[in-house]
Amino acid sequence: MVLEGTPDVGSPRTSDLQHPGSKGSCILSSPGEEALPGEEPIKYGELIVLGYNGCLASGDKGRRRSRLALSRRPHANGVKPDVMHHISTPLVSKIGRSTENMIDFVVTDTSPGGGATEGPSAQSTISRYACRILCDRRPPYTARIYAAGFDASSNIFLGERAAKWRTPDGLMDGLTTNGVLVMHPAGGFSEDSAPGVWREISVCGNVYTLRDSRSAQQRGKLVENESNILQDGSLIDLCGATLLWRTPAGLLRAPTLKQLEAQRQEANAARPQCPVGLSTLAFPSPARGRTAPDKQQPWVYVRCGHVHGYHGWGCRRERGPQERECPLCRLVGPYVPLWLGQEAGLCLDPGPPSHAFAPCGHVCSEKTARYWAQTPLPHGTHAFHAACPFCGAWLTGEHGCVRLIFQGPLD
Image 1 (tube, helix red, strand yellow):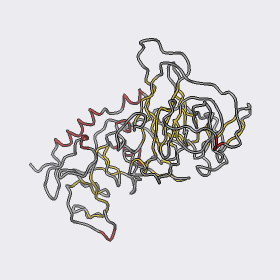
Image 2 (cartoon, helix red, strand yellow):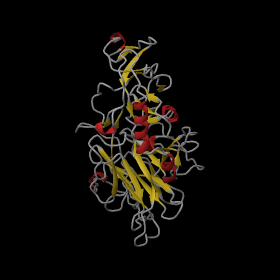
Image 3 (cartoon, helix red, strand yellow):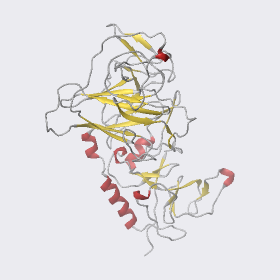
Image 4 (cartoon, one colour):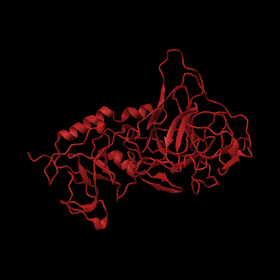
C-alpha cells in the first residue's frame, strides 16, 4: 500500500499504498513464475479497512474501497534491491499520486465513529507511500509487509524526518515518518483469538519494538524472533487508517452476507417488543443504509443492555445530551439505535447477533464483540484505544460492549 506524506530514500519497487492530499493507497506485487494462459486467478487474501461496515460512505469505486481482494497478477512484478541514492533536496524530487498505475489501493484517514475524514482542511497523517505487500506466487502464497512504497521511477523516498540507517550488510533501511505498525493475534483470527503485541515494520521488512512516539527518529529494538509475514487477522496501522488482513482459509470460517441476512430475518421473526411501548421492533434491511432510524428500529441502553423502541422520556441532561434512565433497571447511560454489523470479514465466528458495542450500538456475535473490545488500536502519536471495527468509534464502559436483552411478544 502507498499513502501520501513527505518524500523518502530509494529502494526498488513492489506493492504500495499511496495518499493524494488526505487520501492513501496501496500497491501489491508478487514475484516469481508467471501465470499460465487460461489459469484461474489465485486469491492471496483480502484487506479490510476498519470503520466502514462494508462500504465507503461515497460507495466503493475503483481503487478507493473498504475491502480489496489480492489476487495473483498475470505477470510477476517483484524486484530486488539495487542502487541507493542520497538526495540533498528531496522535496524537489518527483512525487507520485494515487493515479499512478503501480498503486493498487487508496485509503483515507478514518475519524472515530465518522468514517472518512472529509474536507480540504483535514491533514492526513498517512505516509504518501505507506507500505508494500509482497506475495509469493507459489503455495502457501505467503504475504509479507514492508514499510514505504515505490514511486513511478521505482524509487522509495523516506521523509527528511524519518528514521533511516545502514544495515550491517551495507543496505539502507528505515521507517516511514509516522510508521507502519502490525499486530498478529494470538491463536489466529478465530473464536479463541487474543490480541497480540504491536510492532513496527521497516522498509526492508524487519520487525522492531515501537518507538517512544510515532514520529520519533530513534527506532525501537530489533525483534529477531518475529517476522513480517501476515497471518489471518493481522492488523496493519498506517497512522490514520487500520486494515485487517484475512486469508482465504480464514474467510471460509467467517459468516457470509447471506448468513448475516438470515440472522437479521430470524431476529425480526422473533418479534421482539419494546417492554414499555409494547411496539414490535425490527432491524432495518442493509439496503436502507445507515440513515435516520425508522419507527421500528431497536434502541438500547448501553449500560444495561435493555432493548426498547424509541421514546423521548427519561432524559438526564445534567449527565449529558444522550444520557437516559432505563425504565426497567434505572441505570443511566447512553441510549442509542442498534445497527447490525455488515462487514462479515470483521467477525470471528458466525454466532448470533447478541452483543452491541458501547456507545455506538453496532451489533455482532459475543466472541466478535469481546475480541474487538479488548484489542487496543493505535491512536495519535503514542496512545492506544479499543474501537468498534464497524464504525471506528472509541469504546466506553467497563467492557466496551454489552449483552442485549430483548423482550419477546406477550402472545
